[in-house]
Length: 267
Image (cartoon, rainbow, N blue to C red; front, side, top):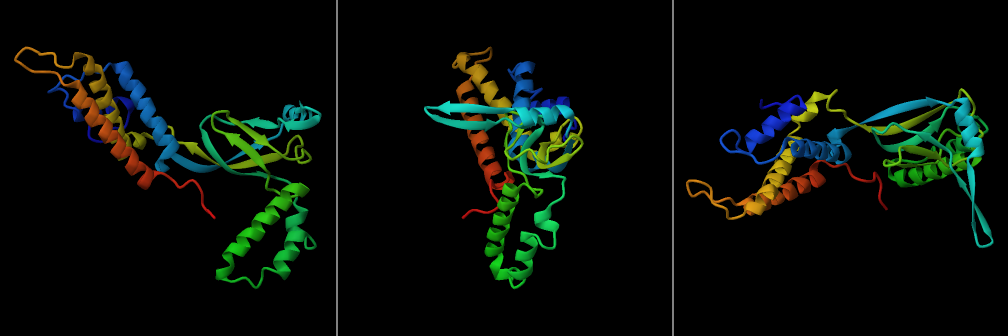
């Protein structure tokens, strides 16, 4: 099927592209399954169509409150004590990145008529024009930082690593009340089983085919130069080298065309 909608159809499509049933593709089914997993992982982590932006909310439980208020760890280095705050929430494993974390609680600094941010915008920022976007961005970043320090605002400092599946919140715990909410602005991977169009993505089809081709060549390298009946000579090295070159080309195209830039503002 030229437009695969399942894992099995993607496997058949890639093998046909490599010459089956005219040629025997010397790759085990388990190897192909591993290669499809590798291709989908790369697609989810680096291709802009492999993720979707979403907002997740979590309501703090009594266990969360207890952990947040008793999880500080003291590290002693020489005569200096450092406090490591281990406040974290367990994050679903399909979350690949987090942009911001928001707490649902009243913000005096932002919404109060006599608050700092309101007065700065009222008295200083009204005159800004389109050419002053950098100044606006710097002031906005400063106010968000001040918001975090005062712990009255909604923007919360955090740490997140995809390989941990933990959202560490590096702030005072005044906003952590049982029943309160926290919202994360994040990206999650697309599940191919639920979003079957992923299997028909041109990048995924090309990349998976090239991975299988490389594995095919690697499997045949140990038989390099062996002659089959009819005088045919196996050339696994050539298949392998061709696949490596194809993979490099596909990955370069992905980095320049399909991969999201790492930062919105540099400088």
